[in-house]
Image (tube, rainbow, N blue to C red; front, side, top):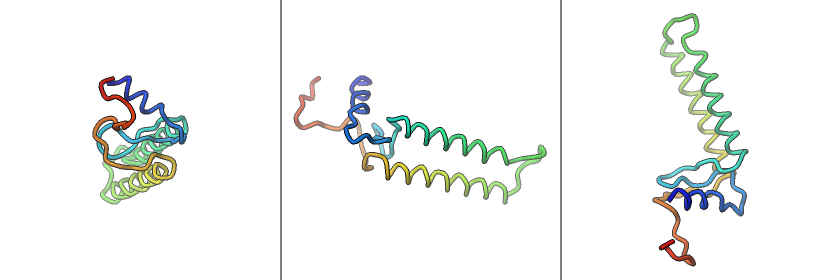
Length: 105
């Protein structure tokens, strides 16, 4: 199963940065620019979290709200990049069925 999934991810004639997840809705990075986008988002989230609780104090409600809004905006940017550079989104439950291939391999 893992080998077939790897083959599905590598079969990328349109050179998508992101391909559909194996189960559910969403994408996984399959090319280096997609991995850079994911790494940049993780770095951005960590940078945003670094501003919480400065001076050893618990963050205020306003600081938490600003943090959540920043994360939501960052996630929106990543989702937008996924729409622009990824495979068209759709619900997927397992590997796609290829009509011209045998299913017992």
